[in-house]
Amino acid sequence: MILEIVILAMIAAFLGLRLYSVLGRRAEHEEESIPQRFDAADNSLPQPSQTQASAPGAQNAPVRAVELEGVMPAVERGIRDIAQADRNFELSQFMEGAKGAYEMVLEAFWQGDRETLRELCDDDVYEGFAAAIDARNEAGHVLDNKLIRIEETRIHSASLDKRMARISVLFVADIAAVTRDADGNVVAGSLDDAIESRDVWTFARNVAARDPNWVLDETDEG
Image 1 (cartoon, rainbow, N blue to C red):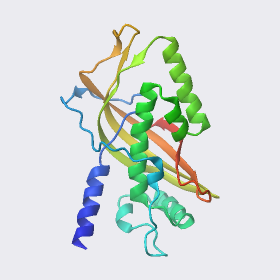
Image 2 (image 1 turned 120 degrees about the vertical axis):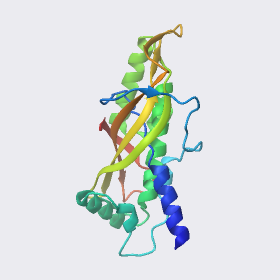
Image 3 (image 1 turned 90 degrees about the vertical axis):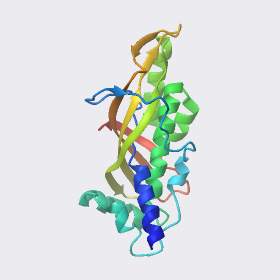
Image 4 (image 1 turned 30 degrees about the horizontal axis):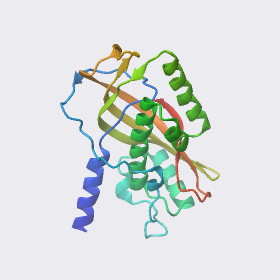
């Protein structure tokens, strides 16, 4: 029992980090000095498929109470509906996978990696990213962004519409954002300051599908 409490506490601490907006949309923020070394929480990024794990043992309680502490009642209902429809759903694993997907999508967008974006996003979100990459390339600009740290990840909403599960996660992150021209000159941003960004990303999955992967279904400001 004590071991389980310690493990859950470690998971809570790990998930208490946050990230940056893919589309570079910035919320009201304060600048801060960047630490000299990147504070990566984990060098191995979980794949979206890792959001699925073994079902909890109790048939009538698919979501552990500790995982729902501090969650609004409407969100809790949505999570429980999803867990009832998909017995393999585990909230802590989903949150870890969502955080990893957030990092991967950010890096893919910054680097212009369309293949990775295609795998992680639905059609509408992918088209938005692709259009932004095209515009950036046409202007001859290159992003030199660096994720400093994830400050917070929190469930924003959750729902089950027939067989389609949707979970929105609030990410708050600090990032150094720099845009360079074709010659490497800085045309916008600075590597000396971190900017706080708040974003709500919605992940979706058909709980009746064999594919266990969740995809990025929508992005919005937090």
